[in-house]
Image (cartoon, rainbow, N blue to C red):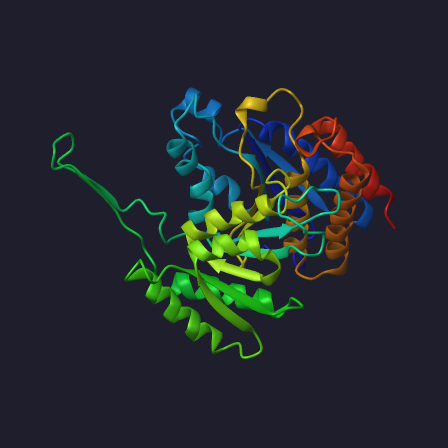
Length: 367
């Protein structure tokens, strides 16, 4: 499923729940506009499952043959999942998004953190350019496992056991991915999130593998920081970070904290990558389904659109047309934010569709 070996790139579009139904169409419009401009041959196919409404009708989040239906696509463009008033979150998430990540071996979760001009920063004395780093999260093992259980339930002896799983293969490949990413960036620095002073087995092992991986990259500087002080430094010293690599749980926390430090989670994108391209990778906004604002047409579509830019960059594998398409989208996002063409969460008055249209217009006009 290589962009360079396949004339037409097939993208599975899944809106999911809540505002996913509103932001996905805007993401598709922008991707289609930039694809037309640069001669990229893309084909979108839409799927209505992986949603809580599908669960209420069928008793499951996806059809039994979901894997076979999606495995031939080059990527998945995903809106959001979850509607707790309809389906408990652990059912909706484990029945859809986590299945994609694990069964398609999307082990590298990438979340850029960047302060854009026009976005008020909650951190004092920060300006665009001061915050620009990437969180690399291990996405398929670690603390998020289904190993464990409850014993002596409803008695005074009741206890719960939840196990973490760290494999050498899993840890090494996410560390290698982070160091490879750092090697392509100007600052060439990796920060590893740990907690080896409290988690006496898994985190010392993580640290050991980090040190071993770092020895293979002598041109990359690196450090390790305990997760508690690392969170504090995201707030106090965000400029010190370049590539931050973390386990599943720690990465989940950091990849929400980072965009919040840059002003809003509403514009934050993410990529769930299978770097070897044996299976489709998935691109989605960091924000959730936000049922409380669904139907008001005020959801910010920028995270979905930025995720589309990440998708094109990954599909292109370095091809100049795809890279330029990615850059055009980022430039258009910067321009609409700076111009105040934004939704209410950023202090604007535009609707979801109006912001999408503004970005399409700028992408189409860019030279």
